[in-house]
Image 1 (cartoon, rainbow, N blue to C red):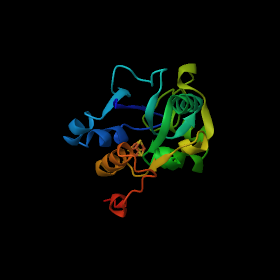
Image 2: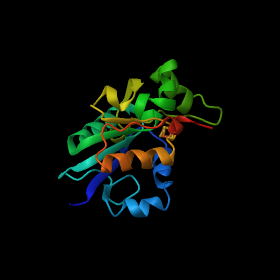
Image 3: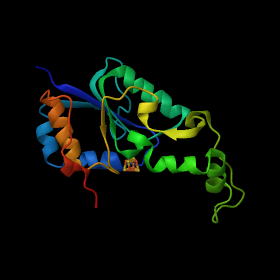
Image 4: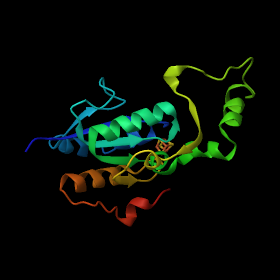
Length: 181
Ligand code: SF4
């Protein structure tokens, strides 16, 4: 049997969820016997290959139109889609923007911040257009597994991938993976 292919990508996210993925540490060596990571934000190839992958992992919230494009591309390219981390699951910290509204949040960050003189709100097509409401990935595309946490514990990510690779679906995360310090 060939290796299972996995692609990861990120939306409106910090790097914390991908760092937690790397925190699997030496277990990742054993994982590499079973899987091939085709692309990720931390590899040369950033986006999933056109040929598709078995598992797609998205971190981060849906905050702008570019995020929607990335989420839809990953959904098209993978058989099983995992939303990794609170931002991907329900909007997480990014969704706090919803409490004040997008326009006010952008103004506060880029114009009114105490350290800003003559600020400008970024306006570049490559960045996409900010949405009025930040959401989790599942509001835009079908998600097969949700792994919460900010970031999710490395043990939870390893457990979920191991269960998937063993064909034990649906994956049920034990309660111990929901304890946060
Ligand atoms: S869930 Fe937390 S660690 Fe992951 S991208 Fe969001 S803020 Fe960063």
